[in-house]
Structure formats: structure tokens, C-alpha cells
Image 1 (cartoon, rainbow, N blue to C red):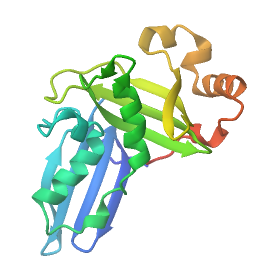
Image 2: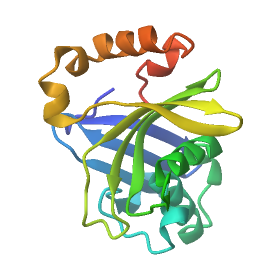
Image 3: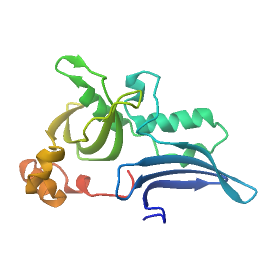
Length: 200
């Protein structure tokens, strides 16, 4: 769904007098997260954050899944807020991100990740992320990947080409065609992990 201001709502949950909302811009790259409190019948913004610019100073491994870290930070800052307004913790998502960070040369925490889509099924996962630095100043190209869980560890099977490399290739630029190509190449990967949803 969309709001009148041109935002898509990725997550919204209201519990009692508290609400947590996550939105992204309809035609431009802007994400906002807000904690709201109802006071005397009117909703007031308790905290408003741009996750692509927030500073995460607790070390890159703790901040690796920036969205999860933000939920934890909000609960710590506003302990009176109802905890279950936030999305449930997904340890598998952080395990997938660790697979990005740990390469053949050892761990590389140059970037942390804002996860915009994540879904698993039958030991396969599809993830879409926006990498950035812990200080919020450095932003990298989006990273989308198909992973398989092998002997308890997530292994990257395919990175989707980005930006011009994808836009110039019709089989990559069109989501449906790209996912069909992945299904042909990796027939064991369940088709529904690629299904877009309003939230994850």
C-alpha cells in the first residue's frame, strides 16, 4: 500500500499506544523508520530515523544486519515501548550476512547491510541488501544474492549483476526473467523465495 506522501509501507504494527513503521520512497531511494506514541488521542513521533544514514558505533559484526540492530537500539532507548511492535529477529538473515562478510581471506567488515528483502525455503535463501559503512557516509551498490545452506553454513551461489551491468541485459533487468533463469540453473531452489512481499 502507499501513503499520500508517496511512500510504500514495508512494516507497520500498532500495539496499545505504540507503533513502529518502516517506509520507502515510491520513486526515489529514501527509507524512513519511525517510532510513534499515542498521547491524548493523537499520534506523536517519538523517534524518526533514516537507516541508510544512522551511525552504528557498536562494532561492525553487531551492526552487520542494520535493520535488526536498529530494532534493538530502539528497544534499548525506549524500554517503555511494547517490544513486539518490531519485526521478529531472524538469526538466519544474520547468518547469511556473515557469509558475505567472511571470504577466503577471512572476515571483512568494511560494510554493514540494510536488508530490504529476505526469504528462505528448503535450505535456500534470496536476499536483497543495500551495503553501507558503519558511519553512514559510505554507500555501495546493492547486493542481491542466492545462497544455499550446505552442512549448516550459507554459501553464495549467485550474485545478481548490478546497475548498468544488469540494466543492459534484458534477462537481468526483468525480475521475472531473471528469477526464471535462476530456477533453471538451480532447480532445487524453491520458486516462492523470489516472490516479492510488502514486508519480510
